[in-house]
Amino acid sequence: MPTNGEMIERVVLEFQKVQAHMKNAKKENATETYEGLKNDYLSLKAVLASLGVNLTDIDKIKEENQSGASLL
Image 1 (cartoon, one colour):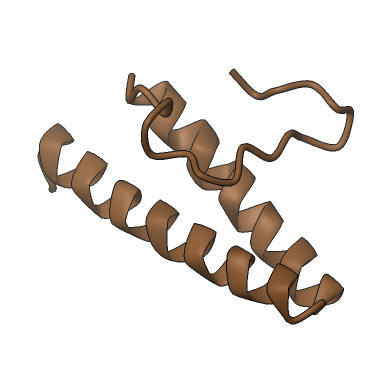
Image 2 (tube, rainbow, N blue to C red):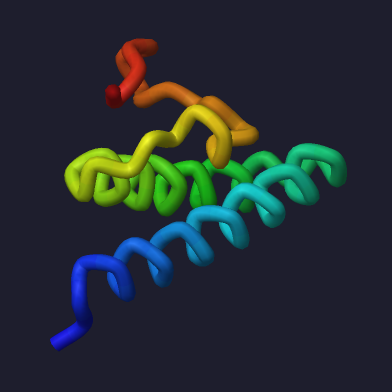
C-alpha cells in the first residue's frame, strides 16, 4: 500500500498531466475532449484537497464544478 506521500506525488503528477491536456484541448477547440478531461480534473482536485494539498501553486486551470462553485 502506498504511503500518503507517494499517493500525493502520483495524484499531483496526474493532475499536472490532465491540466496540460486540457490546455491543449482548449487551444485546439476540442470541446468534447476538454469536458472529459475536466471531469478527471475535478476528481483529481477533490482527491488532492482531501489529502490536504494546497492547490494554489499547482492549479493552472482553476476550473469550477458544474454549479459554478469552487470545490474548495
